[in-house]
Image (cartoon, rainbow, N blue to C red; front, top):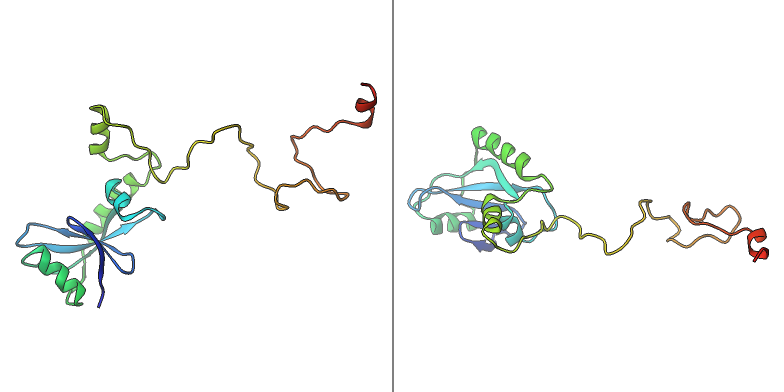
Length: 165
């Protein structure tokens, strides 16, 4: 028996983190498993930013969304594979997985004056200068031992430069 952990409209997520969509008309709907490709997003962020697409696995038809949810929670769903829906999901995923992707409705709202929204999967811009080198294995401290390598861009003064002053 699998429980629905969270639901918003026709989307829900189960206790194992799998996402589903109730598709079709109210009186003849079915469940469609959705795949997600970004980790770390909340349920609402996945839906708002459309970071999911059909996996191609669908259920039988139900008389209402409520009946579909009850059948899901009581393990009375028969799952089948829909290759057409799978291919469509592949195309959606390829389009929506771009780093700069923004849903059409969100773009249109911004064009009408809504506050621009930044994709939650992008890292924030750094506040100051950033070194392009990877962090050192020793935690960043320059080694005082012979053979310890200082940061390659750090300039060291020689003893001759210090005595000239």
